[in-house]
Image (cartoon, rainbow, N blue to C red; front, side, top):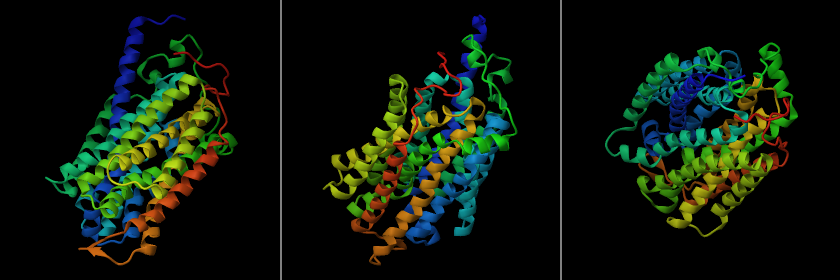
Amino acid sequence: MSVDPAVRQRFQRLRWTIYAILVLAYMMVFFHRMAPGVVSAELMASFQTSGAALGSLAAMYYYIYTAMQIPSGVLADTLGSRISVTVGCLVAGLGSILFGMAETFETASIGRFLVGLGVSVVFVGLMRSNTQWFSERYYGAISGLTLLLGNVGSILAAGPLALVLKTTSWRSVFVGIGLLSLAVAVITAIVVRSKPQDAGLPSVQELDGLPPHPPREHHWLRELRGVMTTPTVWPSFFVMFGVTGSLFAFAGLWGVPLMRDGFGLDRTQASLYTTAALAGFAVGCLALGYLSDHIGRRKAVMVGASAVSVAVWLGLILLPWGPGWTGLMLYALLGLAAGGFVVGYAAAKEVVRPGVAGMAIALVNTGLFLGAAIMQPAFGWSMDLTWDGTMTGDVRLYALSDFRNGLWLSAGFALIGLIGALFVRETGCRNLTLGAPTEA
């Protein structure tokens, strides 16, 4: 069946417009995730917290984000990306404003909780939208591009944020990003459509002369049970948990203090190292997602990336590195290796039926944030065990030896991810429940 060229042009235009709006929302997700690492000293001083308590405040985002991943998948598969992302941006915006205006630790925790609740639905909504608007044959590449662009938010939450904090307060930053989130919510409601058919367009499969993917067959609860009892989905969960969860915990909170307290750098200089890690992560997502599509393999990419991640964590512990090119290289390699996790989303959705792709993506994504939620306070707790009591004003000052405690924990988590990668089922970059891949 031939499709009118004008329809194809409209499809392409709307596809990329929707993608751009949802990616903007996703960039803010990453900003919220990583910003506490740069303002850690201000947060400790404002709320007079220990390392473990600061880790818990930052991880409040991860606690609710983790708990919401399965519901996010259900919402994406049932209500669609448009509704879930709109509501999510509204809640996150209000939470960020509350966090920025908080006068007590408890109020800040509530604000951070609301931010995590709101942004928890954005990524799964975006990835579910991608399954509707892009061919599965290129899902690894579009996933990599998505993570690359999303990581611009991480990069903005590192070095650029440190520069902004020289002229304005951390409170103003979070109030401002909250207002931007509210604006994105309005734009999403007006422009975004969950699938091409909602805009009167053919599906991506129909554009290729193929039948559309079958809809969900049963009630969402039964479909969810089916996804959760599919053994081949779970290995990707553990890759997310160990490899990427440890990176997010480190880059989102402890990477800057390590360079600041362990090596005596100021905050602006220290933030360059987490910027290198996040830039490496962004490039790794794009490059490894493209590589997976190009070679037609998922498992090999995930195993190789996970092995490199374990090696780099051990390098941070055992090698004689320091500020300068050695530190920047190790931080960048840590991010680059963790970028291999992006292939896990494709590997997970390709072992279940297309109608429940959102649930499969959400399930494996839960592993990532569960890992980060455990590692952020655990890293701080492990440092508190050997802290010698040194203070700088109201802020605890940790020695390099204290940070090594957390680095050993991170290496252990990455090893869990490597073991998970060894059990990933190879899909050949196609949905195993349907047969032949599409070629859009």
